[in-house]
Length: 136
Image (cartoon, rainbow, N blue to C red; front, top):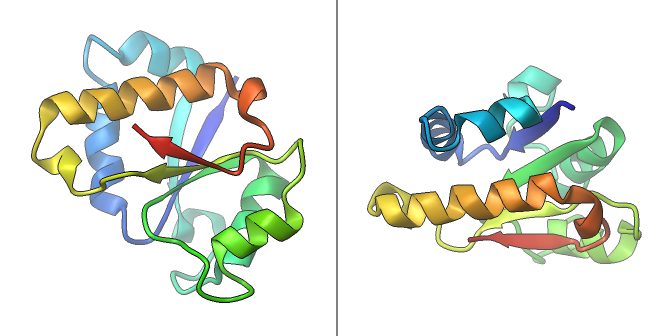
């Protein structure tokens, strides 16, 4: 099983911190079981200014989970509008940080984010069609 997280453009540091935490003895076995990979827009041929709907569709087509913090419903091509318009019961969920800055200030909070993310990923079939899932 290979699980891929596509990291939103403003979360490079967040993904690096998550990857480091997932590499610790506490989480490494689960990370390896999932064969968890982090990809960035450049890795998948997306421009860093790609519209939300383009990003979401690419994730659905390739089986990537989008990791984001700030995409909302400000226009018809926004992430929220796209989820409502194009999401189905089979769609992969989007993982959204509830408080993206807090992971930099609290190791306990970072562990809660990692724990919640791993729970979602280990039980991913139960979360298809959920739209947006928050971390933690």
